[in-house]
Image 1 (cartoon, rainbow, N blue to C red):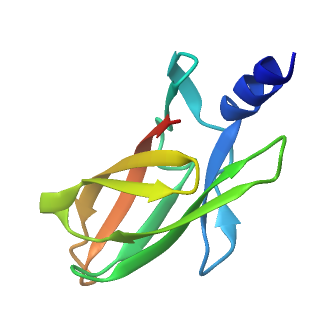
Image 2 (image 1 turned 120 degrees about the vertical axis):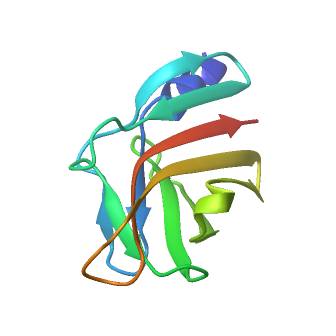
Image 3 (image 1 turned 90 degrees about the vertical axis):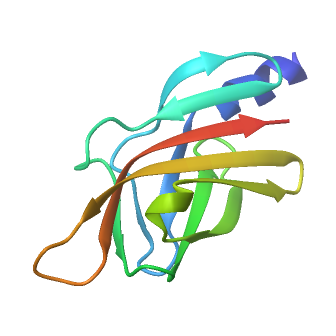
Amino acid sequence: MVASKVRQAMTKFFIKDRETDLGSSRCFIVTYDSPTTTVGQLIRDTQFSTLGEHGSIAQLAICMKDTERQYNFDYIVDPKMDTQTFDIRDFRITVSFIFHELKKERGYMLHCPTVTLEK
Protein backbone atom coordinates (compact mmCIF):
# COMPACT_ATOMS: atom_id res chain seq x y z
CA MET A 1 0.00 0.00 0.00
CA VAL A 2 2.80 2.46 0.88
CA ALA A 3 4.63 1.76 -2.40
CA SER A 4 1.52 2.55 -4.43
CA LYS A 5 1.12 5.91 -2.62
CA VAL A 6 4.75 6.84 -3.36
CA ARG A 7 4.30 5.79 -6.99
CA GLN A 8 1.09 7.79 -7.26
CA ALA A 9 2.80 10.89 -5.87
CA MET A 10 5.61 10.58 -8.43
CA THR A 11 3.11 10.87 -11.27
CA LYS A 12 1.79 14.25 -10.10
CA PHE A 13 4.63 16.75 -10.34
CA PHE A 14 5.28 20.20 -11.74
CA ILE A 15 8.22 22.52 -12.36
CA LYS A 16 8.79 25.84 -10.64
CA ASP A 17 11.14 28.79 -11.14
CA ARG A 18 12.60 29.38 -7.66
CA GLU A 19 13.55 33.00 -8.40
CA THR A 20 10.04 34.11 -9.35
CA ASP A 21 8.21 31.37 -7.40
CA LEU A 22 6.07 30.75 -10.51
CA GLY A 23 5.20 27.15 -11.32
CA SER A 24 3.86 25.39 -14.37
CA SER A 25 0.17 25.86 -14.97
CA ARG A 26 -0.35 22.08 -15.07
CA CYS A 27 1.30 18.94 -13.83
CA PHE A 28 3.53 17.09 -16.26
CA ILE A 29 1.87 14.70 -18.69
CA VAL A 30 3.34 11.31 -17.79
CA THR A 31 4.60 9.59 -20.94
CA TYR A 32 6.28 6.63 -19.21
CA ASP A 33 5.84 5.20 -15.73
CA SER A 34 7.47 2.19 -14.05
CA PRO A 35 8.30 1.37 -10.42
CA THR A 36 11.70 3.12 -10.74
CA THR A 37 11.31 5.64 -13.57
CA THR A 38 8.76 8.30 -14.47
CA VAL A 39 9.00 10.51 -17.56
CA GLY A 40 6.84 13.58 -17.97
CA GLN A 41 6.52 16.39 -20.47
CA LEU A 42 4.86 19.78 -20.80
CA ILE A 43 3.89 20.24 -24.42
CA ARG A 44 3.00 23.93 -24.65
CA ASP A 45 5.15 26.93 -23.84
CA THR A 46 2.16 28.53 -22.10
CA GLN A 47 2.36 25.82 -19.42
CA PHE A 48 5.90 26.78 -18.38
CA SER A 49 8.72 28.88 -19.78
CA THR A 50 11.61 30.85 -18.35
CA LEU A 51 14.13 33.31 -19.77
CA GLY A 52 17.89 33.24 -19.45
CA GLU A 53 21.08 34.52 -21.02
CA HIS A 54 23.69 32.07 -22.29
CA GLY A 55 25.71 30.72 -19.37
CA SER A 56 23.32 32.00 -16.69
CA ILE A 57 21.76 29.76 -14.06
CA ALA A 58 18.02 29.05 -14.00
CA GLN A 59 17.10 28.18 -10.41
CA LEU A 60 14.37 25.57 -10.82
CA ALA A 61 12.59 22.92 -8.77
CA ILE A 62 10.57 19.80 -9.41
CA CYS A 63 7.66 19.77 -6.96
CA MET A 64 5.56 16.77 -5.99
CA LYS A 65 1.94 17.89 -5.86
CA ASP A 66 0.61 15.41 -3.29
CA THR A 67 3.56 15.28 -0.89
CA GLU A 68 4.73 18.89 -1.27
CA ARG A 69 8.34 17.71 -1.61
CA GLN A 70 10.57 19.97 -3.66
CA TYR A 71 13.78 19.02 -5.48
CA ASN A 72 15.89 22.11 -6.21
CA PHE A 73 18.46 22.26 -9.01
CA ASP A 74 20.41 24.86 -10.98
CA TYR A 75 20.03 24.47 -14.74
CA ILE A 76 22.77 26.07 -16.89
CA VAL A 77 21.26 28.01 -19.82
CA ASP A 78 23.15 26.63 -22.81
CA PRO A 79 21.44 25.30 -25.96
CA LYS A 80 24.35 22.89 -26.50
CA MET A 81 23.60 21.36 -23.07
CA ASP A 82 19.82 21.15 -23.35
CA THR A 83 19.71 17.90 -21.32
CA GLN A 84 21.18 18.02 -17.81
CA THR A 85 21.12 15.48 -14.97
CA PHE A 86 21.02 16.14 -11.22
CA ASP A 87 21.37 13.70 -8.30
CA ILE A 88 19.16 15.04 -5.53
CA ARG A 89 18.48 13.06 -2.38
CA ASP A 90 16.70 9.87 -3.45
CA PHE A 91 16.20 10.85 -7.11
CA ARG A 92 18.20 11.27 -10.28
CA ILE A 93 16.46 14.01 -12.24
CA THR A 94 17.14 14.56 -15.94
CA VAL A 95 15.73 17.76 -17.44
CA SER A 96 15.70 18.96 -21.03
CA PHE A 97 14.23 22.11 -22.57
CA ILE A 98 13.55 23.43 -26.04
CA PHE A 99 15.53 26.64 -26.54
CA HIS A 100 14.15 29.58 -28.52
CA GLU A 101 16.61 32.39 -29.23
CA LEU A 102 15.15 35.82 -28.53
CA LYS A 103 15.72 38.40 -31.27
CA LYS A 104 14.83 41.61 -29.40
CA GLU A 105 16.47 40.61 -26.12
CA ARG A 106 19.71 38.81 -25.44
CA GLY A 107 19.22 35.24 -24.39
CA TYR A 108 16.79 32.38 -24.72
CA MET A 109 13.33 31.31 -23.78
CA LEU A 110 13.39 27.79 -22.34
CA HIS A 111 10.10 25.93 -22.71
CA CYS A 112 8.37 22.56 -23.13
CA PRO A 113 10.47 20.72 -20.52
CA THR A 114 10.81 16.96 -20.40
CA VAL A 115 11.71 15.47 -17.01
CA THR A 116 12.84 11.97 -16.08
CA LEU A 117 12.68 10.97 -12.41
CA GLU A 118 14.63 7.85 -11.44
CA LYS A 119 14.74 6.29 -8.00
